[in-house]
Image (cartoon, rainbow, N blue to C red):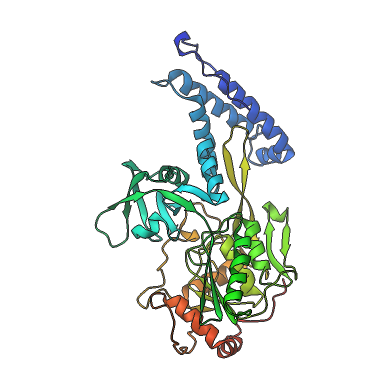
Length: 468
């Protein structure tokens, strides 16, 4: 719907509802009539207000009119309208957001796999813009940003109170341009300034290498448009390098903030021959969708170790949860982020976008990981000195987040607070990466797989395929 032209300020309009106010109220009432129907009326009667939400819309229109006519300076009606929508959406949950046209265009560029920026995944926590994860091999990762860093300023603009999309927009720009980012980390006495040169951020979301001429390693950095295609290509290349057959695979989902749900389903499907991958349920259990695995193009049943940490979120948790529930792989690392909700991105008529949480997702065994995350089968911290809260940013720490459901939430809390008893130490072997403790443990697990699998079975943590 096109926006009406702003009123002529020189004409000094009389107080009352402006053209924009009348248009907004009419559109809102029409929308509520179509979408709310009897449900909205019933909710209004239950609250003791026979007018339901319609009366509040009249109040909103009145306030808009007062601002337009009495505010000390001229106002931009489009900015007011966007601000009202943004404020409404912010009350929902930390993952629903409204994006103005330029922010929505930037999101589409990121999803397509290429944009100009510095490579930071951000979220909002207690009014602060916080780093979820720096993308590998980007200006941000080269500068040393880490999960949990708080972004204080970007080019002199304070970030507190802004949305993560505002911060993301401030970080994007033509490659070769610079931005100064002030960040604060626990243990630092004061914020530190980083001068970053923007680069073309190509989200080639798959990285691979071969160990011992037989063990594959694939890192999934995010789930964008071509992640599954890149994964298939990487696995085929690793097979060729190993002489035609892999003896095992490390699937690295650490610091993977998620992305497209359909790509997560395809990745999990690549390692599962049958069964449920993920179930999504809308409000009140309506609009249930079940994604299942197919036998076609399934990888051989070689040993599989999946690396996870506190930056493993959303779509990457879907993959880890499906492989764990079906007993297809060993989950190794630390507790994951705990985002068990699905967002739908809706493009609006004026080029703006709405990212709206429309469903919860459940692992094949019917568990919701909301708040708790995926508990690893084998707890291995990134360093010997790291404590239980080494990954500071998690879903349960975000304002307005959804809470876990029923018994699962209680069980999850106990799992999150007490690590499983450690397995006997595994023998070290030459050729392990010296700077990655978790990867070393994963490769050791592949090299001693029969013993590891037996230990896991004895502890009941590697059961047969789950039946939901």
